[in-house]
Length: 329
Image (cartoon, rainbow, N blue to C red; front, side):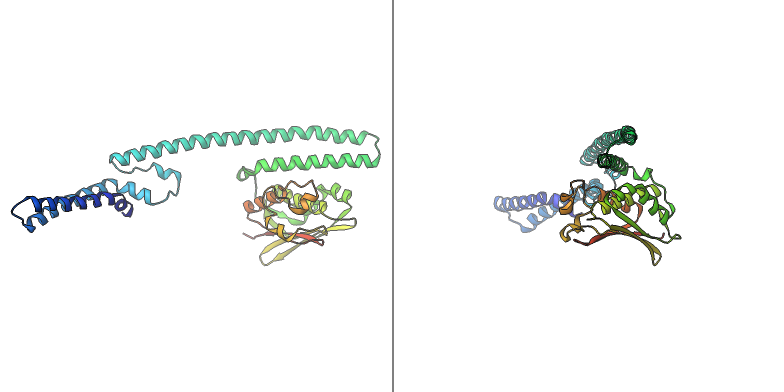
């Protein structure tokens, strides 16, 4: 109603000025100056104006209601707005706009699907030559230093391919997960075993304190990916030899908590609030050029989708603790 009145306000002002001018003209032009006659004419004109406004509002009330209330869903723009010419024109415009939007969205989704399919195929194709290179390296009689350096590069390739694969799958997450009860100790041990070369190469050691009876509700594949990303960061940023990465699992009320702590360089206080931002590497990440800024971002996104909670505490020069909270549903 307010929108209708605002739209008709110029008409009502114009009509009021017109009534004053016409009334004044009658008052000056007619010899029998009767105030009652002038007021009667003005009242009759006002009644006609009100009838016109009431008719306009009745025929376009759906249009004004739609313009005043934001859309909750795109499909609501297809609702009929009345039989008035303006309402019909607006309805046609919204229908055409909605169709253009659907076509654009379909095209964008098709491109995204094609890109995701390409990334998946490319990653799987790249795994084969990487595996061949690794097997060839094992057959070569190279010095330990050279062999270890090449193996480290191969491992980086594997980690990069894995990150690319899981990044592409993130948009299709709802089609690619299975929630079930998972023994936490087994998952942690498998994640550590999958990254044992990193531990050995950096001379960092895992220290696991997770009760065997702890079970979490999660997706085994995505949970292993998250733990792997945190482990790689913990090992890479651990300074010196003889350091360790500690895994502690415990119950906190009805929930289960897993803490992964390292003894590395830590994270600067000003960077802590941005560690989950995509492509953010921070001061420490710039010192270690291997950082892509995507690992913790992906971990955070997966946690959100699975209904877990991730927190990070860190003291520069002393180490970092990543805390996962698995809620009991």
